Length: 128
Image (cartoon, rainbow, N blue to C red):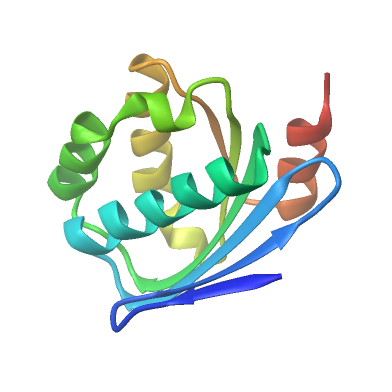
């Protein structure tokens, strides 16, 4: 298990046999926080070689939709090429914006799904 901590967020990584688990926590989300934590996750994926990723987000205040779209649009997609991503947010009221973000990302070629149940996220991630 490894941990990355900045003044904006904390990520705790767990390298499971079949996937990388990234737990992200912060008080506030923003364009800068989102870009920073996705960059850190991309780095960890390169280091571990995992092709499956479970993100568990625990951010109190969600990102603005325009900032989420900008972060997705500007991301270097090669960092997540061939990576299956299951996204679970502990805050149920964040599901609509997360679903929008996942749809935008999928349109750009990401393999990503948003879940409101962590067990469903793991089941989808591990399905062939």
